[in-house]
Image (cartoon, rainbow, N blue to C red):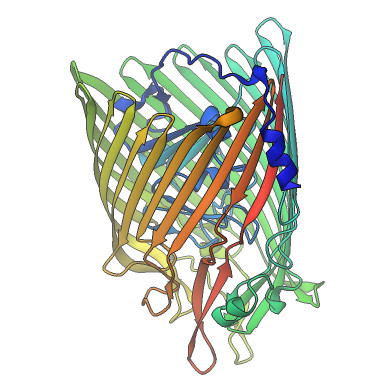
Length: 636
């Protein structure tokens, strides 16, 4: 089949000639300071992925796209072996908590109890651009932005157009996306899109099905957007290192009944005119998750958790000359019930917690052109968080100032920023009522209502430049984190365990339309933390082959990874190659992806548990092997 598709690429088609290049435009970003500014004036490390670039990369989802960004590391980005997880600047939540804030058209989309984002849920055909702000963004966005901020901007309805996209490939992958936009009145446009994806998975018991419908109504000054999304997935669980060596595709028998079913509904309204922004959103999420937690190798406990969360939020901002001010407020109602499970069947209730989280933040930013090529930005944000739950209450507050200076030279821009950031404890870390056996006839919980917010002081400096058709950038940072929250195995609970230092360097060099090379060095404390690679390098090469075929090759290398903080269980280097070949046939495009083309064997993420004799055992989630897929896109 793949051979036939490859031959189809070679069919000549005179309509596939490349269109003339548009005139160069100033690249604008808005996520850094929540207002539009030229990218080379933003005193922060920012990566922008545009729709045109995403079409050439071997990516189909947001998770796969972010895996190509220097300074970010995605684990299980294809979702073929588990739920995708992200690391940024040495922060990794291990699927329990998020340190990177995700927004879609300005609206936060993290789960109420953990802040976790479903990185594989978002497909790319209806995404116009992605802005990635590396490093802390609390001065603009508040909580969950300690490691960075990522914002998706969807296509705004305008004119009359449509698209359809179909994909099929290895591991039972099948997906379809479609969208349509049309003008229904003067200055009024209606847009609709839908997607459905299915994946059998690389391992046994790792299938996943996602689907969603999105409607937008765009005017010259407002947007109304509604979305319904559904997810149904299975969890294969971790394997011991010896089990992986024996059979990488097997699942853990203790996880035979683990699954998750989640429904998400969201409605948002925004208005922008004359320097004024107003926004409001409402969201509902219902989730049933039957989950096993390992307490020792070969021993775990299973429970079913049913969640019902409702959130309402508002935001507002005003720009007057050099000054921008704004507010954010939200209220989340949360109900979570745990039930016992026997052979995958729901039993009696064993724990419950319900309550509210109220967040309020106010921010102000001022930007001055202090000289012809100098820009000074100063701002701060104040956040107040109030939690009232049936099993406890907690207040938290934080002030997050930021000062930045940019100097634009003839061929390069230099910048320096100082900032503070914070990360509040999640509702699960504070109030999760799930009981664990103490092996003495009683139970205990791992949550801790006395947790304090994590706080960080950040300094970073960078330089970027353009010369002819080349672009390059280098940024260095140092972040001191206090009251860091982590799981303490000595007390089997979450605690503020102390402080750490996050240091790193990120650099990239690109020749337009030819190649990009990037490298990131990350160091946390004196000993690198588990699952966080110390060295990550990536090279992307582009070529135009005969018969109007375009090819992109992505090479990724990771070094310095461990399953444990003590560095007793090293993980091998990752050397991975992904390939995309595309061919246009008028309004249609065919893409052939070969992922992990060399069939590299490595583990995505893992941890260490001690058995009942105290002997440590490494457990990990193996990465998928070689995979191929074909996608066909038709636009009109």
